[in-house]
Length: 494
Image (cartoon, rainbow, N blue to C red; front, top):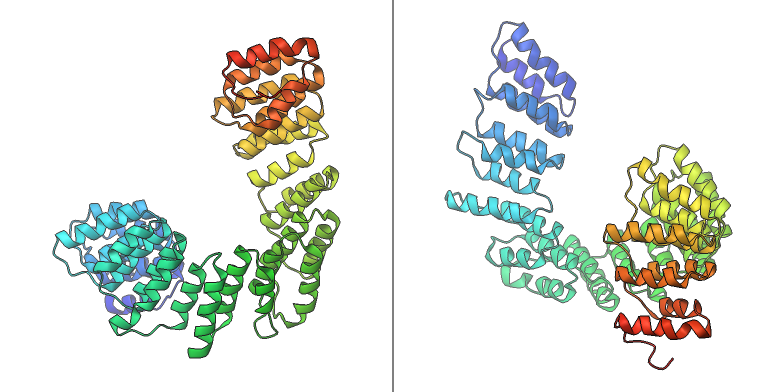
């Protein structure tokens, strides 16, 4: 065999990177010298398999023979794995002239880092390389992912346009909640001798967000011209869901349009109307080819919003009977449903079950569980302080839930301690203050309650009502004097 034969064999490996690396090693074993094609082919195989580290290892071994294709292929490997910093490093240290393909791969690698993508585009232009629609589309995609819709439209105005350009620009407008601009872009296609396809219509419908009427107009246009597909209906139902317009969402549901995403969208639009949500699920279930965890998650969320923890538990069991794999979001919805009904034992049981699986609880999980334990302050604080062992940082909701549990347990000192910790992290709001004041009120510690105002946390009518509840008539005078001293311009009608 000669090197060319090995190169063909490596290129034929598809995404089977161990075989490609083995063949590359066999070249030297056969007393032959691997050439640039050998390395490029092996790096490309690693790229297909998303083995970016292996790709960079091969790239390091190919430095002496590397050409622009070597760089482009290695950058693409980094791009597919989301390793944008490594991709930019390769671009900045290249010792061969780079082409549009290499820069395009680098721009794609930037992901949501749109400023870096635009910097690469500018560098490409400075080197007098002719940019094409693919490069511009990649840069606009970065702007979309980075929620920089204005930057995306600036690029759009100067780009060599194709249908993909319009789709990316429309999607960027959707990400920026600029539904009107998205619709205008769709109407501009004719000026560029382009015809909208189903993909562009679907993207524009999605960009409508909560403006469901506009979404339905576009859906009707698409149905009359080309024919809508499942994605079209899913997008329109999603718009109705965002507007909580469940009658319109339900009207779009039929045996032919019923998909897990569509049914889930209708369920989401129903909000806390969990009985209707379960009824619709049962009626449309026979039309569904598959059921997924997102659909069950929507059902669980509906039960949670409706404070129906038993129904949520039944949905969770039905999900298991359907052999749908649970995820953290489903567990979070179940725990939240238990929390709404103060079913702390069931919430803790669900949390323990989650942890027994390969799933990892997140801050939302802990917050729901802590809130469920608001009548069991010891368990609530155990959960709060165990977050650190899971490498999780408590947020404002975590602190408020833990302090509320202290209020229920009349543990005013712990409540004040937690408020101090929250303040050190720049957290704390009117809910925090109200819970601390409630804990102080339970213990009759009105002086400590006044001290809590020194932290400068926001207050509202509830927190001030708690503060007044602490004082007896004879204590009200010094309390009001203290409030006046703190320049609190409230209670003037008290």
